[in-house]
Length: 384
Image (cartoon, rainbow, N blue to C red; front, side, top):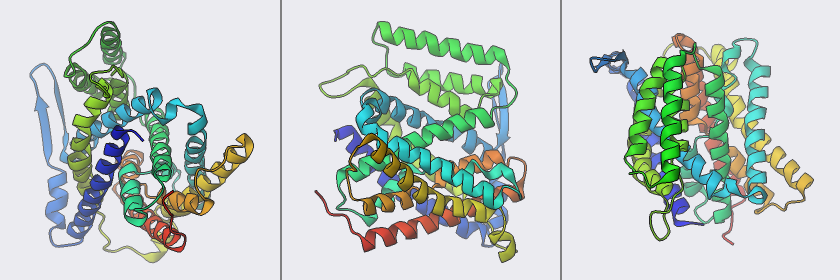
């Protein structure tokens, strides 16, 4: 495994712990006398006025559409690295995690649709994604002696999972398009991409372009997360040292900001679910239960079945025992960050629906963590 991947895994694991603490703090505050102030703070209006351009929104919206663009930019850099020099560039090694990601996305959709689709069909995209940071942190804690190939399998699976989630966001949550700013953003990306192919471009140009295209995305109707990924994809894997690329260097600088600052802030703003007045019948028979069951059951079943099916059809041996595959499948049900993000988009303007989706994500992710704990305690992996 390359040093870049090892650094990535360490950052994700540590960041996952910070996200967990931020989420726990949000739940405590939302169910305490501070809840009124917490909710009022998230609704604080903020306006960015540059004279020639103005954009405004509540603090929570700035976190979701502004700060989270940094997270999606890092996701784009990770995807570009994996597609060019990483696991996704090798068809032989990528087959099983891609199949696992497909199964881990399809089964939760089917389960949610069957269980809660008749109550509110808007929630089916919520359990699609796996939280990279949480899942890797959980694996590091539950199976510290696991074969590195198990960690790499989970990392690749989660990256493909994020790619599918980004495609869903682009298709489902892009509002009415305004062509002029969209064409301007695409032209700028094409110009800088071509410039980078012809000569060495200063590294600061690429994040600067990402900021400009973020503003153009706000005007065009394309979701800012999709534009952030597109801006990351123009960064070339050009060598800048003995064993480093421009792509890896930029990711090295921005990834800690995403893992240690952006995601904990998002977790604190998104995980604050009030449990007051919740009726067990409403929770067990609605959106919350649909999301929770889809994550906790759909993910491990889908990951395991599709991986075994792909291994059988391609005659590719599993790189680790099936019992460890089941454990990783359970951890894939931790869909925290991306699931909360998609839930906020799917139920935009519906505070009750969004709260139920958030509760379902919290329940499903917690149950997945305990299922993963049980799997790895019953069948502890041994380092090879």
